[in-house]
Each structure stands twice: as structure tokens, then as C-alpha cells.
Length: 363
Image (cartoon, rainbow, N blue to C red; front, side):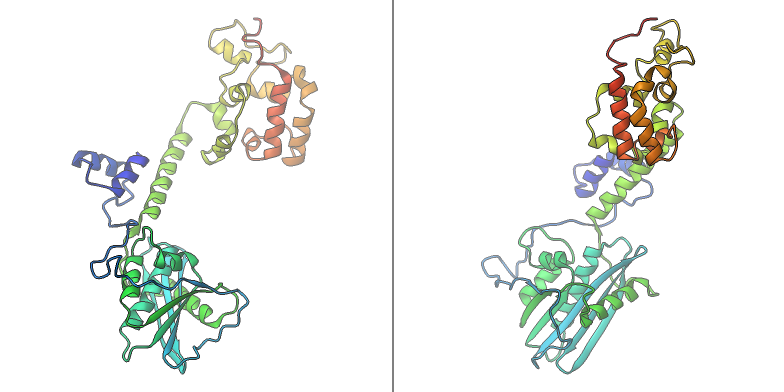
């Protein structure tokens, strides 16, 4: 359902109304009909590829450069931009100056679904909008941003999304030169620090959002994944079966380690409880008694791992690792997958016992 929903928000046309309704009902907390920002190739009838001027590349400034706040030339304006996401609130900031002093400051709140990437891009867009409406117009604008991704997207020849479509259009249509600079954040550059303060004030300040931006498709996919994980987690928590597996993996997040390992079959038997231990074989009516050969108790997974005297000779490293890592013996089953050294000693112990080499133990 998650994959179908991702496909639905990307291209709705092939889906029938009934299919779309089924997908929407699976994720009631997410609006799958909202406008989505998807990367597309830049297209403009006013600026066809054969007539477009070549835009200057982004200039990467070294972090330790001394950058004066004001530009030196009288015909140049300098704009510092930044975006900020704080506690689910998104904002942008813009600080503009010329050779004589401050020209303008701007801050604003964006929809909460906007990413930091969109906020950085929207700040760049506001700088270009401001410069294009100035009277008299400057001879050049220098834009400084600490987001290399946003600057690169503004000049990218591959697929881009809003607000970078409008940024590209403005860059191509400006009657004066625009130069983009990347500047390292939090390195003491006054203009960058001022733009950062304005962006935070815009995110946390009162008032409604100042502009409407579509939801990035990456953010929506992340939301769908979170909803799927919550649904999966709820089903796992309420499941009445699989008690052995749930003891090792009390949450679906704790089982993520399994995807990174190539576990042997005898380890999977222990983790699942579907093993060649006598308790399970008795339960499935393969043998006549569940009692372990040591005679002290039924041969369950906890008994085999922690208590069976027949396996004491193989258990020393497993026990020592548990005492060192968890400060206790036996460890909680849920802690075994949490700690890599304990998991390694757990796997080694099961392998050394060779308990699972024979298909069935004698009854």
C-alpha cells in the first residue's frame, strides 16, 4: 500500500477512482490529493535552449574568507539568504544592502510541510524578486547562501522543482548580472548570521504563512513511510502470537539489524522459536517428551540459551559478554540484538553447540 500510494501521488492519471479511494483510505492522516512539487525539466517559451544566456557558475568561498558586509561598488547590491526549520515551523530570511548601508530586510513563515531545501530556495527567490522590482535597478546583484544544494539547483540543467523553476526564469530574464556565492554557515560572516536570525524569526514568529508552496514529494513519501511503520508497529505490538520472536525484537525498529546480517539457519530457528529444541518438537507432535536431556526442565529457547548444563562448556564467552555489556546474566532477550558484541557471542554460542546438526533428537 505504501508503494501504491507513492505511485498515486506521483502520477494520478492511471488510477481508477475506486483504486484511488482505496489508497486514500489506507492513509487517513495524509492528504494524498494535495499539490505536490515534483522535479521536472525546465521549460520556458521565452527562453528556449538555443537562446538562453549562459549563467555564471556558483562561486564557492573558503570558510575563513574575510567578507565585508557591504559591497564595494556603488552599482552592486548584496543579498544574504537563509532558511530555517525549527520544531516543525519553517521560515526564510533575507538581508539586502548596498555600498551605503542596509536596503531591506525580509522574513516570513512558510507552510510546515516545506523542507529546509525549499526554504533556502524560497529565500533565493525572494532576493531575485526584490532585485527585479528595484527602482532604479542595480547593475549587479550578489547573492550569498549557505545552502550549496539550493544554489546548485538554481543553475542545474537536470530536473528541478518549485521554487527553482521561478528562480531560473528570473535569472534568465534579469536585465543585470546576478552572481551566486556559497558561504559557510556559522563562521562569523555577519550577513549570513543576520539572514539566519531573520529566518528563525520568520519560522517562529506569529502570523500566517506568507506564501503557499506545494509539498515536496520526498516529504510526502517520508510521511507515507512513517505512517506505514506506525501501522506495522501497531500490528506487531498487538500480535498475540510469535512470543519468542517478540522477546528478541519487542519493536519493529529493533529488528532492523536483521536486514544487515546473513544469519545461519540454526540462529533463525532460535529467533523464531521454530527450532529443533524438544519443547517445539513436542508441541508439533514430533517427539513424545519436551524435557531436555539435562533433565532439569523443558528444552525451551530460554532454557537452551541460559540454563542447560549440557551447554555450559560453550557458554563462557556469551555469559562474559553479557556481564560486560549488560551488567547482568542472563541478558534480556531484547538486549541481544541491541549490542553488536552480545549478538556476535550469541551467534557463536549457538554455532559451537552443534545442537541443530541432527534433524531430530532422539525421543
